[in-house]
Length: 111
Image 1 (cartoon, one colour):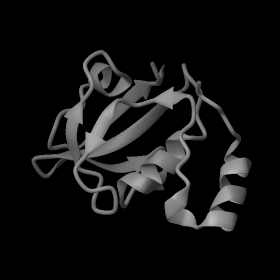
Image 2 (cartoon, helix red, strand yellow):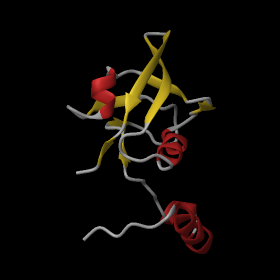
Image 3 (cartoon, helix red, strand yellow):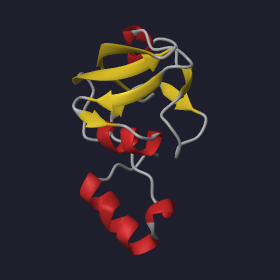
């Protein structure tokens, strides 16, 4: 069974066990995969029917901003998403073929 903890609880575990030992994801589901979690937030795949898919994200897009916050890597994006709930709407900025785009998406939930 899934056991949910708060972001604060995840932070306490990180302090006790180290940053690499604890991952946290909130209830909101974006629906992308990336190749390298510590590099640029380069989308490698999009889950069909997900918030990312409905917003028109594609493999090869680079997510550069989440709301007004920079997303230098996937880990920073995951931390920002963790503060959202299913049904929340957010604006993201992407680069596609070196052209900037703004997309608005509404989060789905993990299945």
